[in-house]
Image (cartoon, rainbow, N blue to C red):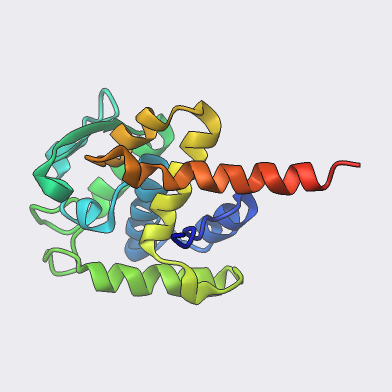
Length: 185
């Protein structure tokens, strides 16, 4: 059986997000990226490929263009996340990318991977070496499935072509059910 992905608990999410010092440009950029993965389920490659025109500041609609497998999809973000990205837009360097480096170049996946691990260490999250940008995506998917109990919605949000890829999230919830039932007296 496939190993279940690491998913952050609510308190770990809160601890992680508190680590971003938004007084600094890098902190605000990294917070926005982390929240996009946690709240919209983006892959890191999709997040770093975003351009400002992919997010409608009026409707909170986010267009993922040419995601994995060449598939486009539409997602929505909260007003609060849209506003944080709006703050970033006012501060970001001139670039075609929504989340560029300081010099305006496209951010590298590996760079953001290391960034998330550093923030996880600062947050004192257990096993920070197991935390990656993809952990944030897994966390989103698990939370969406727990909330909706609709695996098709999770599949659509994640951009999975095959439902079997998405089914891993039902096993996470099954594990929670087993744990809860074993604790019954």
